[in-house]
Image 1: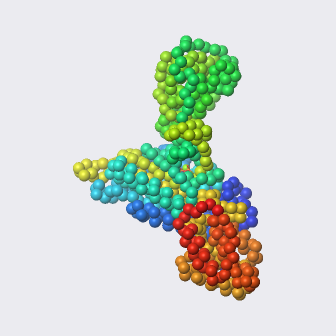
Image 2: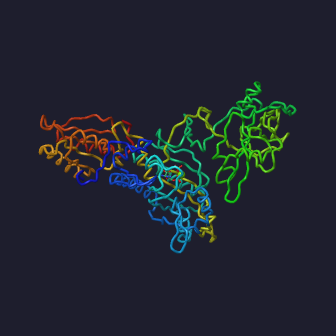
Image 3: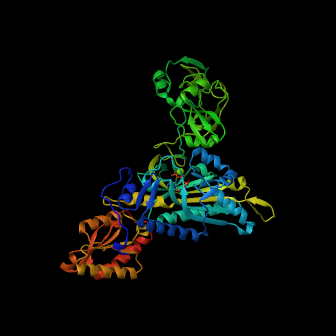
Length: 586
Ligand code: ATP
Ligand code: MG
């Protein structure tokens, strides 16, 4: 393609609202144009990149038996009510809704489990039609609380969503593993350094899930990694080991009360009782689980030196969200000011869960549910009922990891994909069944698998941009090569550029000829900003000694002078090597 026929729009300045590299560069290079918060026009260059990402996704999913379909974006309320998710998505306000002329209410697809389950129920009659794997690459809508970071978190984006239907759990396990491997190949082929991490399934639900992360400082997710083994988990899900409290195994002493005027926090208690360390205290966190039709107060017991992980807690409670109790609610429910709650004689309105870190602790210090009073030498099971235990603790950097005990390290990541074992969550709720070998109806065992296609493009920019602009990995670059005659009025320069252009096209290379009449410096700056990784620069060297310059920004950006005749085979070799994806970082 010729640049004079391409809608190229570049800007010198960053958009005012750009906080991250990909947003900055994609806006300046004309890939995206903001229409309103979280809504963008995708320019022609971005569309080419997205097309390449989609093709890689298609090839890999077709390779594992996926069949491409398209599901409607408008999804009626009644269908979502069958799965029970209408209220969930209304409560979180994630789903945008609209109404047709008959007043039927529709949600704009944030995801499509309901629709595809309905389709499978209607069209799959027998086990002989299984396993079945369907996918689409289509627009998704989510009314994000905070759209930001350019294409990374938007209201409207392109997702590849796939859904699998198996007869049983063993079938799902095999399909899930095929998808996992396909995802590894997809991201590698896109030139991305991505890795799988143990994840919380969130509103999609199900029994197991893995997120694919691209390591980048701008990433919104924190990942904890145990070095020397393959443990990596989103901090929302991560666990760690914690050294037992020194109180474990002590002989129980008699419980006593102490006046602790205005002493509310663990730090204040450590000052007040210098001999009692935080790992001998129990903190009682008061919150409520928000359900569709009610709110349930919870008291969470956790060791004084530890913190609660709200996602783990939400999962334990089965609520849609966790909210901390306000000071007024605490006073109303416990009769004491905030800072004095404890497990002994806790009002019955509370459900109680204790974190595993509390197990076995003896003679603990905790609040007395009375303003300005704490209790010492409390023993759970003796002074109050033995609570249920669960892992609701936030794992932190530096703590021993769960597998080998090596210290956890933290990396930031951008979530580009997420795979889930759904099991029969949707098929049971929606009564979606097939007839098994014994002639009996049986619910499908499902999986679902997402890739944020538009976010993948942003992640690639984050991972590889340099000080001059975007550096696309060759497989997803809008053009594999750009040829820049620096002075198009110079017939020799233009002629040499045209001949290289034609030869590269004939060799099957996707190439842009920058035939724009403009200053040499500005042209190179533009091409660097737009992210063309392989550049053929035809400049003054041509007249001097017949040389041109070839650059590959994905591998160190060395400027290699060569004769015109040598350029084509050199570029073909470079591009061919780059097409397989992941390259060593330049
Ligand atoms: P996040 O935690 O980032 O909100 P999610 O867990 O809600 O993501 P999924 O429901 O698993 O995401 O959706 C599948 C994929 O779609 C994600 O892995 C991500 O790449 C992409 N995605 C999700 N929300 C957005 C968004 N608002 N803008 C762009 N891409 C998104
Ligand atoms: Mg989300």
